Image (cartoon, helix red, strand yellow):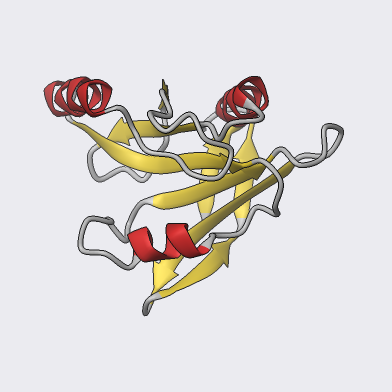
Length: 142
């Protein structure tokens, strides 16, 4: 289960809507070993595409160094789908199944296909398949 603060969820959704019609992407970092998303880090979609995203290499290098310096790790990797449901695409699955993907990271997808509807879902990869997990949105971590 992903437990995440409402303020962070709101920031992810706002970023997804602001970058529409292109996909938005970013991470939420947290203390190493905590599974607690704490620091919202919107990233630049280097592809500037409505159907694909990737982090800008220089920006990712800077963020990775910040996480290392702060004893943090990526807890959530998020991106948006602009015209489809919040479910991993074929491209998402290819990445998730690659050796580059950390299976502990929560994969959040926000769909921006309906301007008045919020579709915020999270997945983990289990035995090579995406499994939707429950998302508990809290006002603050107690």
